[in-house]
Length: 200
Image (cartoon, rainbow, N blue to C red; front, side):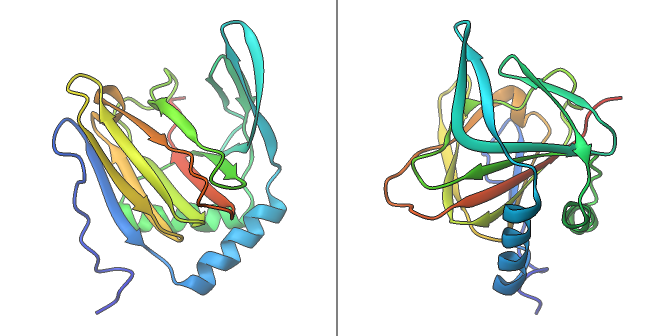
């Protein structure tokens, strides 16, 4: 049995969407290799958001890459995609082959420690493919990832391991919010790649 290819891909959402957790799709050595390459070679910048008309600069860092210099607007700020790096293309091919999905862009997040996270939100920006798949690939520190239904308020969560893959698709973004809670227990960094499809 191949530990990293025969894992069950069960839907962790009870209804109104698909969020399939594949678990770890690579061993520790490869996960460490990609973490270090991404940490050192990606053009990271502090994320920005406009909240109540005020520009907020976060400690968390981000980067945006894609097939073309796609514009991507969220939190009332716009980014233009950089060309793929060698490592990002390798990772894109890995998850496309594993899931059968296709992606043309990737938003990366760098959390320096557990004090940095993401509040409740949905990835439902208008230029994203409607009900399209988002592939979330994690490296570094294991973190809790939570979902909350927009109507019933029911919550579910999963612990995202290093080298693990989560695929969100269908009605997930329209029916559920998700977040990464902060925690004082985590002292080490985490890198998250969210592969997406921008509608051209």
